[in-house]
Image (cartoon, helix red, strand yellow):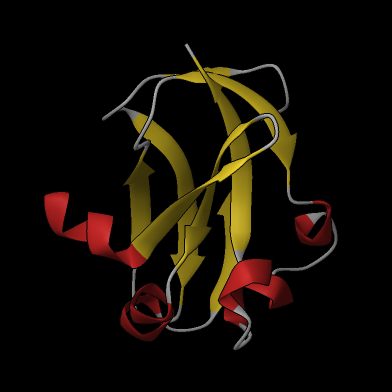
Length: 100
């Protein structure tokens, strides 16, 4: 499971840590068709399942790199998952987490 870490990026945002998908992650998983994301207000724990993605090549559970409360979910993922499959990795984010 630890090799999944290189497939995700984190960066500081105003309300905590943003977690997104790297180009390597896109290549490894293939086209993402579905992602089961946490909701705003959910508590997440480092190392525990943050989200699940269904893609061409794999169904993967993604461990959270941080512990805290989900403060935002990418609104672009409400209707489809194209943002996770594009070349703009900044747009390919899942959630923001306010760390404990």
